[in-house]
Image (tube, rainbow, N blue to C red; front, side):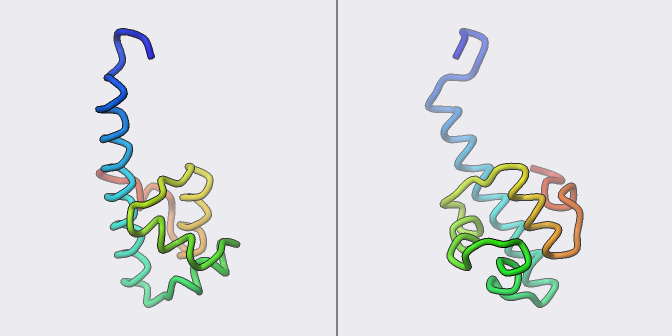
Length: 84
């Protein structure tokens, strides 16, 4: 990191907080659509346990992964990222 960047501790904290908030949005969207974790992961091509890790903020997925999750729920990635 260069001197203009946030320090590593803050970077990790922000990444964790982002993952938690994104996971909450994914879970809320999934439930609002009446979908199970299994249904979303089967459509997205992931293991069922993976979506649980994402929804609980234990894993911070790539943009491509978020796009696949959104697509599996018939929504745009922008809907999941809005407000984060």
